[in-house]
Image (cartoon, rainbow, N blue to C red):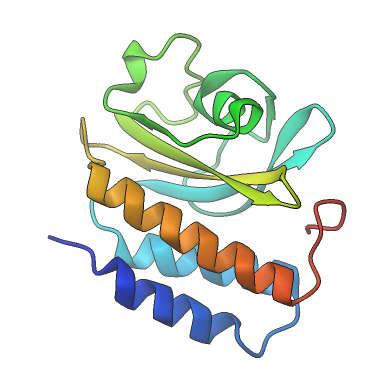
Length: 160
């Protein structure tokens, strides 16, 4: 099943258009993506808090609450400020396993004022689940989300 990321971007923009609350918008962002991206078992935000990533809104099984910057896929994505797409998480050195059912993962940093404020983490029970097209689409959705947050006055020091 192909995801229509363009349509999802419009839906996301519409969901956030009139809601000023950062937490509510974050929850809807995560909920929309989890509902519309097939073959995933976890999707959520990890928020930067000093030298750690702390669990934010998510859909899926209970997860690791705190991840040190630079560790695992999420911590590496945040510290390097770049998207990481991992075809087989067991082959990623230092992978932090929160759910043994997860086989592949994509993590996209959310950046405001040139500072990583959070990462979007998406896990799948399918090896090599995320294509370059998925990466481009998910990155675009993250840009829509961040643009709306900025329009609502979010800054890197006051995100959630």
